[in-house]
Length: 344
Image 1 (cartoon, one colour):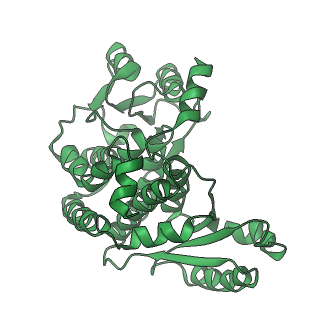
Image 2: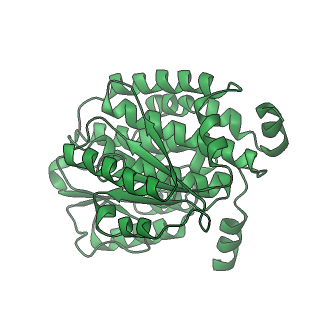
Image 3: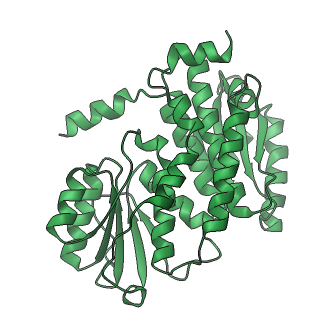
């Protein structure tokens, strides 16, 4: 079948079009209104971004994106409770696309008890009601997306918050460059023969093992792993250099490709520490001894921030195509929905 036939058959909610128009999500965050947060940056000494799934990965991505600019520690919290050090000088950013993520709602309530400053990011739901009850700043996201397909909204809203708090310089230039890039890539990845399609085809029948670099590209690696889980209905695994070299590397000593069909994906960047680059090269030799293929993903864009978002966008397209090639609807998340029903 042609690619268009796979999409027509399996993409029941037209996520293909959502991906093509993801750049519009960034434009929405630029035009969106932002409230007075009610405090000054000198009143906080740490930031906790509380969320799950797409909301949490936006926090991870922000840490990679701003790795050379952040002047206060930023922690991503994926739980019902906050770290014990959360206090009156802590800013909690409660991020939930639906507004009903129970872990995020619980962390919001604890933040209120601890006297944290709070900013809420959501389309509405219970989180909006809590924000109103406790006079917390609320930023409304555009509705109509599945959370994992709304990264442009959640990430660039976070970026705007940091900018408006004067934690970082104005990001308009790099943001416009990313909009242009995602428009261009959307046109490329919509063709019958493109990079995302090629990589997805290579992964059919294999379990992806993804390696990235801590504090540089780990958000990209984890995003790809998560998107492969949800969009492609596939187990995928992710680890980071250099930590991987202190444990998981040993697994390759006895890896047998006939028992576990894997393909390794490297998330690479030219600005990695020289020793990290060397580690990737050495581990490549070990992996190839076990007959596993390595697929390198590397952006050629000039700016690090643009390169990161280039790879993020590529990851989304790979997972989408792999899903339809495997005969699955990239929108369906049955077990997540069943779990939520059981929990309620």
